[in-house]
Image (cartoon, rainbow, N blue to C red):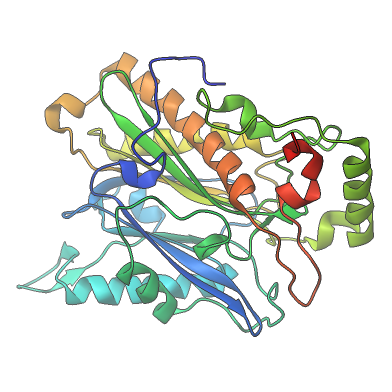
Length: 356
């Protein structure tokens, strides 16, 4: 449990608790599909952005632009997608739609803009039965069109549709925190890891111990029968659960209404990876391309520019939001049965933990 009692979740306990942030999902399931795209739309005028990429198999776009040494500091949207490197094409649809609305970095006369749309992808190719069914520009456009500031839909939606984590069904999760000084920070994570989000010896969800008071259900002990059955399924799946180089990756977005620089946003992303490491073991492997973006809207104005102690508190909360979001992703996921075989969710794999 998070130790600071003064920290509370935001209105929806999700990324859209940061004013101006909107989230949209496009999801395809069936007929060979098990994938999707998630778009995080920045407030009007964009948000200052940063990124931290870890692991041995990243699939990303426009991450170099977010280096603090480079010129552009405003991000207009972030795309998270399935489809491995093919899925980066989803950002094209977002760019075209934003440009048609005049949203982007000005490079000439009226309407001559280039939208800044960084992106990251997970590997889910073929999980629905067809290797060629993957996100494209149209799917990115579809996710952008439905982006809104309501509670973030979680589980097997958007970029988390085909996700898996350590042999269990992964997905999209989100969490937020309001700090004592009024700053809001939140995270949206797509969990698709080589590592496990549960203790293989006990079935404990690692993230649950970091929840805010009353946030996670009171999970009971996992029965020996459930643990034995899970081990049998893992053994039947073979070494590595069918994973190989580049065949995983956990990605996400952290957002805040604080006023931050690009360098500070990069630091927030880095601390976010610490939160990832609390919830997934192992993490940042050579088979993952774990990537976290940070968007700072600056909505709180000059009052939102943190001093060193306030920035420390923001970093701490950001890491916890990532951990908690991973927990919500695992609890929100549902079992799927594509042609290659069933991928059980946490609730179906360990029903004894939810039986009390």
